[in-house]
Image (cartoon, rainbow over all chains, first blue to last red; front, side):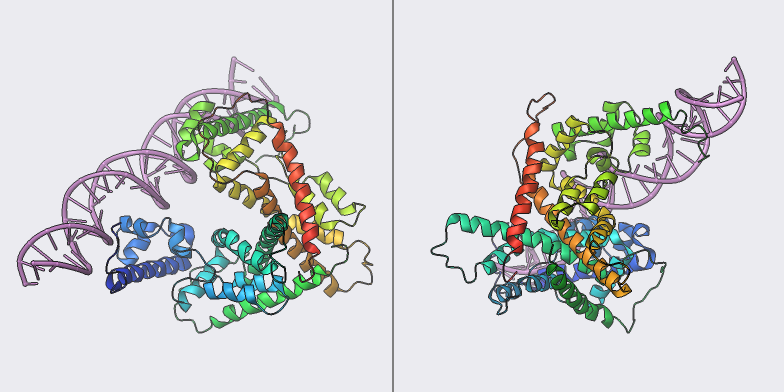
Length: 235
Length: 235
DNA sequence: CAGCAAATTTGCAGCTACTGCAAATTAGAG
DNA sequence: CTCTAATTTGCAGTAGCTGCAAATTTGCTG
């Protein structure tokens, strides 16, 4: 609470340690869930596996689920946001979809953790739902960006307040619709339905690449389908 | 488990009683939540208020939340579905949106219960989210309907399998997008954000009408906005 | 390095949602 | 009325999660 006087000088160790522990716990959680399934993993198991007390666990994560899908929710990258607003083309929808797809782990990119989570999402639809849910929390932020982009080529001086309100509504509606499309894409991307696979400690698997590639593919396919769908006459 | 031989003759009392109890519990739950807020209502409170044991409560409802937002999830009305497929006009999106908006309580329409729940949704965004979540469970069903409607005016004989698959994809994508729009509409409709209102046992209030009306209004506005948005050139 | 203050971790006690099981109660059929 | 099957209930237990205060660690300062 007291303002951090030495923040900019050396905010090291303390923060770093926290981050490290956090990561360690998340890894343990993910491993355990992959091995035993969500329901068969207790918080205690995660704690002993990662060497912290249960109480500390709940100091780090609000819920058991949070430890599995990641402590901090996905965020829009600052740079991507800027890029999106000023993007050259006229492809609003594809660009927005790409922007949202890019919402990844805010921390350093831990490849293993990332792919493991993808796998978990495939095995536990409830967790995928939760993650998508968390993604839609940035609705307002995305809507603001869409709003700004919609404003391109509009003379903001001669514009009435009504125009602005209207465009704001458009932006929000578009964003919600796009979130729906994002869900569609995610469901296409991740092999969700009941899979018989269980108990497979795939720690050093050599083939996590396809998932990543498929993300781009899924995005591409979705955009294509979206375009073809928008051209339906009756709509 | 044993097949009910006298089902058609007199399936009365037993089933009826169950339904009655269910309704009574839901009413208690809703009242209590309106009075004390979600977090301050325990399952025990609901039980004593409705005169059943806790164990019985969980025989009726899977979760505490289920008792509050309703035991059975919203469903697509059979008649509405048929109507939707064969609807005269060319307004696919508006019709589909109307179809989804019509997802109401499957049981008899208890006006008071209904409006109380709307109020609860406004006070507890989490519960609204859950309800919207439950609505999106009918995705597949709606997508099938959209698929069928998209098939209108198509010669299904000369159509290739690829065409069908393609149209199926379109239907699914459209449905997901529309679910997003439905969310948008719901959020517009329900005064969601932090409201200071607490502790108000509005049992005999004379003004539950506006809510209902606003649903139609919200639908109308959303459809209008949707149309105006779809006509954006760059889209 | 000693020593101090603040932050972090931990143990513990407790609450609440939820489940399995077996006994008790109730309802419907003959 | 009686028997059988369904429903309800009590009880004991599991697991997620929280508040609180003690114990420990951390980082700084003299």
